[in-house]
Amino acid sequence: METEGERLHEAGLTAIGQVMPPDPFTSIQNALQFYAIDEIVISTFPNERSGWMRNDLISRVQASTSKPVEHVVVNPSDIKEGAAA
Image 1 (cartoon, one colour):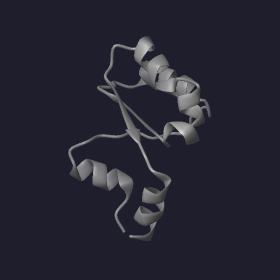
Image 2: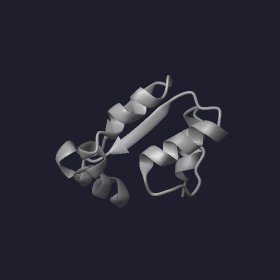
Image 3: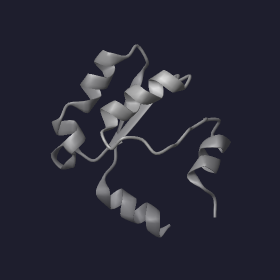
């Protein structure tokens, strides 16, 4: 079974993962201090289901960095389908 890291590598992407504080904004700020980051990708559930979106995470991150910020919205039913595949 292929890992997420392997799939990202095959796609030409480098991803780093580590245990960080549970607050995503704090985690992003910490990562910006320690890693050479080209782009920030934030994945959330749709607005009505996402606490991060209710707390305006995307705008807060965009205002705090000059790095491009991409927002990917994940439909919960897509997660179930992906897990079954």
